[in-house]
Amino acid sequence: MSTDPLLKWRPEFPILEKCTYLISNSLGAMPRAVYDSLASYADTWSTLGVSAWGKAFADNPTWWELNGAVGDKIAPLMGAPVGTVLVHQNASIANSILFSALDFSDIRRNKVVITDMDFPSDVYVLRQWLSEHIHIHMVKTHDGITIDTDVLLDAIDDTTRLVSLSHVLFKSAYIMPAQEIVEKAHKVGAQVLLNGYHSIGIIPVDVAAMNVDFFIGGTLKWMCGGPGGVFMYVRPDLLSTLQPKVTGWFAHKQPFAFDIEHFDLREDTYRLMNGTPGIASLYAIQPGVDVLNQIGVDAIRAKSMHQTRRLIDIADELGYEVVSPRDDATRAGTVTVAPPNAYEVSRELIERGIIIDYREGAGIRIAPHFYNSDVEVEHTLHTIRDILDDGSWQRHQRHRDFVT
Image 1 (cartoon, rainbow, N blue to C red):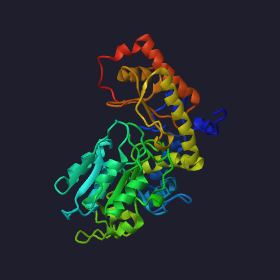
Image 2: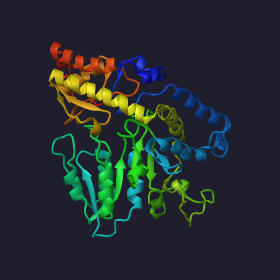
Image 3: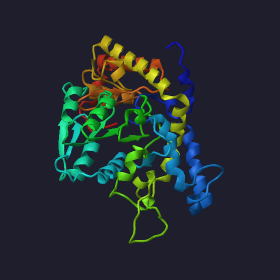
Image 4: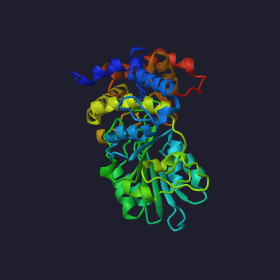
């Protein structure tokens, strides 16, 4: 790209002044505005105290309203209607709420379809919650990069209750064919839960158009919202059917009645709340979401395809294995490369100020975002070559306990 209008955002991300930050698939760079946002949280707390639950400065939402208000900011990034997105602390909590709300009592329909390329934490929760009630069918990758669509669709049959999958695979950045999966699941009477951690903020997502039943994503990565922000979408017509067992007073129609004998679930998205939310995180999330809404995901996607294609081209020139899809249409925002001694090379890259990460069984994940330059992308691959040529990777051979 001869001119890159998105680079005007670089000054808004302080860490870019200190290093080459190519790890937004793990933790997005912090927007400078988070300083002011968290200061606003502190000011509200110090000034209003407990009254902040029912009062706010200017047109800002009260703390009680804040979760829904932040959800409404996130909604346009995923094609969701206003009032359908809720924020939780992490994906394990969000998954637990959903799993606890679904009915698995029909032993004739108790299959849950997953893949061996899903993020392990999602599967941990699934097994701990439902192992006594379900049959897990794991579809395995044939190439370490993708999941065979035909094999996956064949696994979804009239014994399937739920299909629980990553929208984008975290090791390879392969974009799963969500529309086909949803259509097949609905055809046989099953529901679909997608984990969108690696899709929201880097590729266009439209949950309404794909008619997905449940969608969980996070602000941690491409959305530059930091830890503690996970959002949950439930298809509006399904909300009233859910009876979550993981719950709390925020989900109560009358939370301040303090009636220990009676509990009535709300009818809006707060039905899937539990206890008191992390208010500070709800402040920290917003600047990143605001930036993405201003830029637009289509512009981010166009730049991402250009830069990830450039990464693949240079890796090919240097003879490094690429462990990501080569088809632009099925590749999200990360390119995983597997040069010789990939772990040791990744450690040396980080010491040289090029921040990437390494995943066992895959390689070095390089994840440029809208604020990264083409020069940074090209320099990273050439530095891998230099590290292999000068032997500096050997300094890290005895230490394999480092995880980014």
